[in-house]
Length: 381
Image (cartoon, rainbow, N blue to C red; front, top):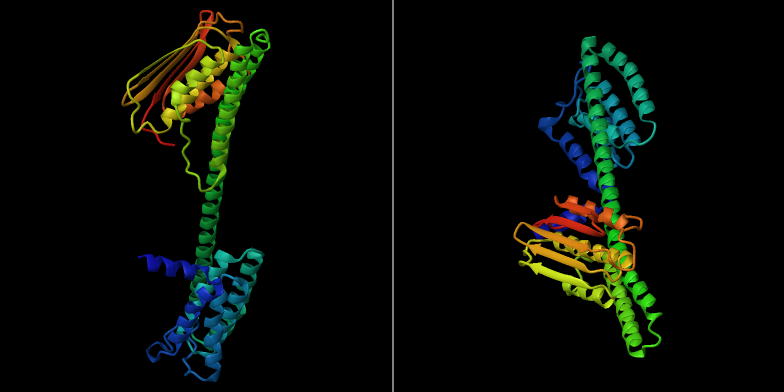
């Protein structure tokens, strides 16, 4: 199987003319099979004639140009049509005359420019050929009309294949654009979550450090926390930038330590956080784990920005079917209890939760703010 695929891959890498040449050679070989001679297309009823030197030239003109049916479709059709005309007028009726249908189909499928002009010119050229054949032969006019209809059908089949191929290419292009847009949005959301959370923590810690100049031991502790937050931000950003590597897997996972580490970082930034986690994360949680992590991260970030120092509670419950997250802030801190900001973080979370079929809400609760999310598990991104 592997050798077959390798051979097929090598064949596809060959030039298109080389790949189309065997078809022309097949028609050429068939024309010299005695049982097939004078058994090709017979248009107009011209009496059959034995093969001669001119017949060899005719079958070469009808068969070998098929090698260029995709690279030079107009030239291929012209040469094959001329060979077909001589074939019918001389009465050779070789089996290679059937190559005209192949040339027409290929032109309909692969001709890029002047398609209508080409179709019109060959239709007009068919008229004098039909007149000459009707004078040399004995077939009625209806035969020429029927044969022309077959030629139109061959061209139309090629045109249909061309339209189908173009539609498929457009669909793939649209899917690729949608995939790129979705990937950009996904990475943008991750960058927003990481940068907003870490930078907010650093700003809060730096603001606190301004008032600790009289307490060197606490100042050093705060500056150490700022340094640690900055290093974590750099590590998370490097992890996200790795996603731009084509060899990187498609799935983004929560940073090491998960929710407990996230809560500890918020506490280091001066936010009193109560944390409770029930149940065990399901093995098939997939992207639900990451979304739950981002919900808690965004809620804690908003608490640090707008309710710094307020009591904050984080409740997470796992079961086999879903993850429930609840983050509440009582709003009694030094900042505004409103989430404020651009709202992009909460809007992005609402979208991500809904994509997984869950529910998300973020609304005032008394003087504070409450974020709830129900995230179904089992969806892998």
